[in-house]
Image (cartoon, rainbow, N blue to C red; front, side, top):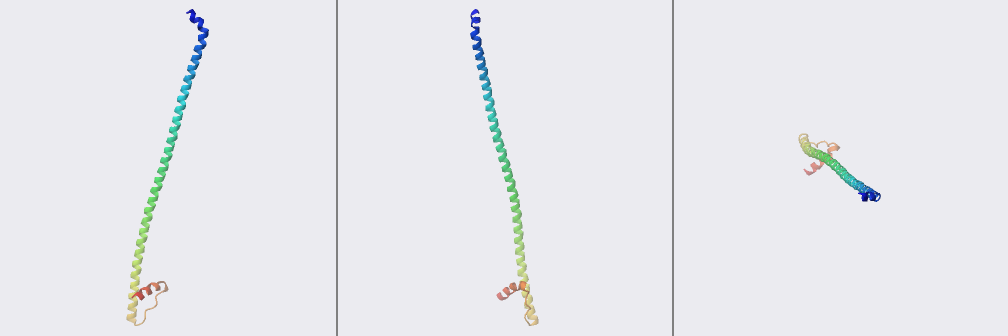
Length: 133
């Protein structure tokens, strides 16, 4: 025991130094774990944020596509409606021109004189079919 007491002035600083080094190593290890955990957390948050932005962008694109498809369908229906109206007007015009020709023939036959000239708005249509007949 006297030997240990006599070595106390040498051993105390040595154990103190070992304790300080051990404590420093524990602090370093804890800081390293914290910094790695923080780096992983930041990386995870970054990827999560990127994925959320990508999802939002995809959702916005899908909404736009849905809107465009709806507008396209509406436009397609309008075009079909206009085409049907155009076909109907052509049928009516053909029927009206035929009716006018029948009336002109009737006037020529009943009155024994030429039919009056058609108005200039329809003259080209009437003459076109008159010359074909």
